[in-house]
Image 1: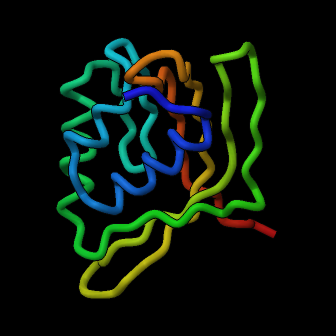
Image 2: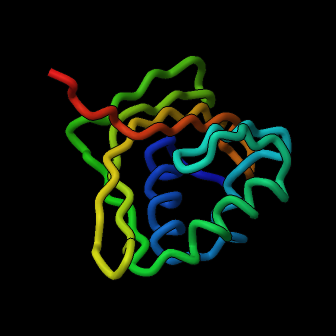
Length: 130
């Protein structure tokens, strides 16, 4: 599958995370992709690692991702290579309480590839200390 634009890849990623299918999510990541995940201290560099990370995340009850569209920023590096950055919130239950984890993200993707995500970094928004 090829994508028309970088935003379409992002929207597919959100939809696939919400559906809880680690195979479908991992299918968006290039074989040499780097994933710096939100809920793990370890960088993931292999396709089976990407799938494993999202398989673990999919075990959370009520899993969802909500994109903050107003925070979305796109930079085009070429006709097919783009970065997207912004904020999304993961939601899932912890001890039967639905919690939200606002997180910053950046994706580097090449939409000329069937597996367009080359790099993905995500981290929770830090709590304000002031």
